[in-house]
Length: 122
Image 1 (tube, rainbow, N blue to C red):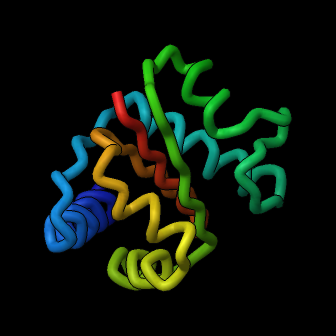
Image 2 (image 1 turned 90 degrees about the vertical axis):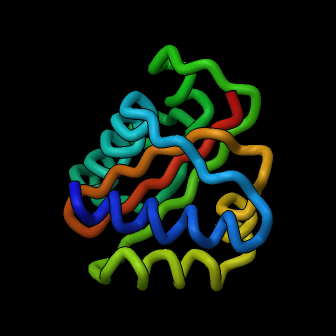
């Protein structure tokens, strides 16, 4: 939806400002991200390990998405896309994923206030 489009535009503008290529959005990865956001909401937790014990890397592979490297940012935030991006850029680990020029594709999933942003290099 619009919120994800706005976030992706702002995030890619930031990547370009630090010399990285924009990330290409993939529906398959966005679905993995959305499922994780829904799982966090439904099971009332906030973690990269899901309710079945899977890591982000396992969740990507289980979705039959090929990848060489991967990363994941999560947030519990009711704010605007700009506020979420600003919060992530203020945290070194999250910023490292956003500014990782090796990543080529991404997917964002938002369910209520739970955000999951997944990155891969294909």
